[in-house]
Image (cartoon, rainbow, N blue to C red; front, side, top):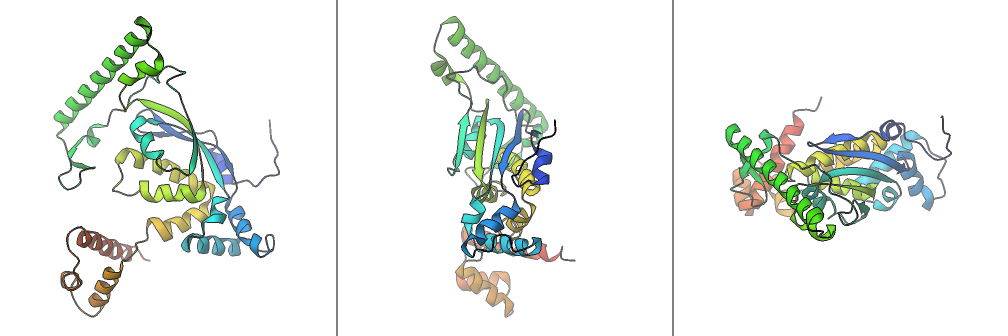
Length: 295
């Protein structure tokens, strides 16, 4: 059946509706509804001047890029998307920290657990980082990684057996029996977010400092956003994801470098040391790398 609608349509979003994007071993992100397009962001911004319908696509693009660049968030908040997701509980708890969204999660009080657990791929089993207390370090040897995967799988199986024993054999309430289930158990939810806060989430969760697993889901969300609102997403990439903010001391260091000082000398002059020095060095490397791809 062919449906008709009077609401604004995004061809890119329409092509993705109801098509889950696979994430990790048993997870997915699926766009199930959206409200608004690039055009609606521009129209919302022009409400203040009463010129909503008097501009074309080129003017819309310039305005949207201005809004994102200057962090004028209200018009960007006017468009929203709704997703269905399945992800490990440990990943879901990171996503839920972005509070400007609406979530309704699969309940283990009402329902049986989803019989799926996340087991990292061999390449993703790594040692604890020696420089970052919340991150991965060196990849473990393949044989050791396979052993880790086998131990995790056995633990998951045992946890599910214990759950079944508590719930089925001993008659324990599901809300109590679920206490024995690990955080790599998959959960499912419906999640709604406006575009401004969605781009804020992507800015944090696509970063290489974010945990690998949440980056996988963030990339799936980014792929959907880029198809849904391509102009706004392009602006997000240009002004946030691939942009770098220089702090006051970093600006002074850049000024000294333009006058002929080396990076090391400039940083020593302004007092950039430790983590601040490492962060500034990474920014300089990013800038130099960006210069190599300019046509």
